[in-house]
Length: 339
Ligand code: EPU
Image (cartoon, rainbow, N blue to C red; front, side):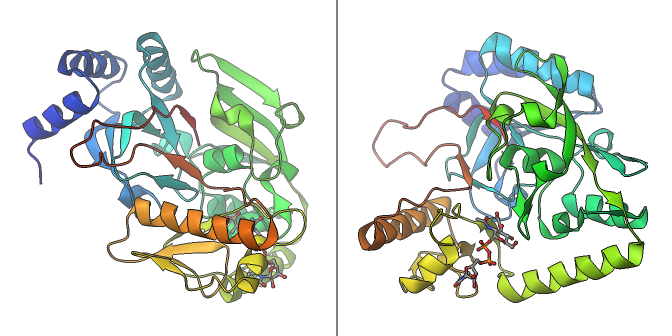
């Protein structure tokens, strides 16, 4: 366990120059109130479903939209790298951690749901499972597929998350967000250019809330459908730590099937393994590192490329820096974006 002073020194040296790190920290802290959660050197492994990766230089849970906007403005003015973490279910944090600020919309201010008829306005920090349960409670059908996706509304918008043949943008009507200057905007969903498992708009914008639209249905009908989805998921997906599906499905064949056909289930690098239950899941155990996960992903991609000539595309975002190689200068770029 590092002391506060040791942690400050580590962040300062890793941010480049101690003076600049101190200036950044002072500017960031001035943008937020005491109610905002603020941590230096926060381990991110515990905040991702893969359970690997290093710390964030600064980890912040803003208390309000205004403070989030102020943070975004400071980051822009001082060119501080920043990134928004959702529930960490579709991300690999490299072992050297993330330089700059990781923002998480975990404060209750981003966790509200307002139901009006067949529409639910959901804060970016709301879990998708809660959206599905609230929709059922109010007799709003069509959102059951969200039940088993282990993400938040904000992260799911960024990834256009999906399950059971449906994607979040199938049910989004409009979105409130901040742009990279911290200005509030509102957009109809169809203007955001969402695609299968991605919405590039949210690389530069932070989602604040979204209006989802379902249709009137009896809660019992909704419950039955949701239970069916849940049974199917338990039967076909592994329970160990993972980031969900690792690869987008290529047009020709589902990635999980392809990986199974090539005999890659069970292939392991360190503490990371291709799941025996579903070939498109990489699961981790015990002492796994992000380097294990990423090396395994590359092994699978190479074998699929050689055997079938198919280029598997990751659906999981990779952020942060590798640990420095012993005796070498620090490597790696600065990540910026949201997800
Ligand atoms: N299959 C195999 N072997 C496997 C896994 C799958 O042969 O190891 C076959 C299945 O039998 C099926 C086909 O591949 O014929 C597709 O499998 P599945 O129904 O499990 O769906 P998927 O395409 O692999 C997609 C989403 C999942 C979502 C499920 C269920 C993608 C990349 N994945 O998986 O989303 O939960 O459907 O709706 O689109 C995620 O995005 O992280 C994710 C988990």
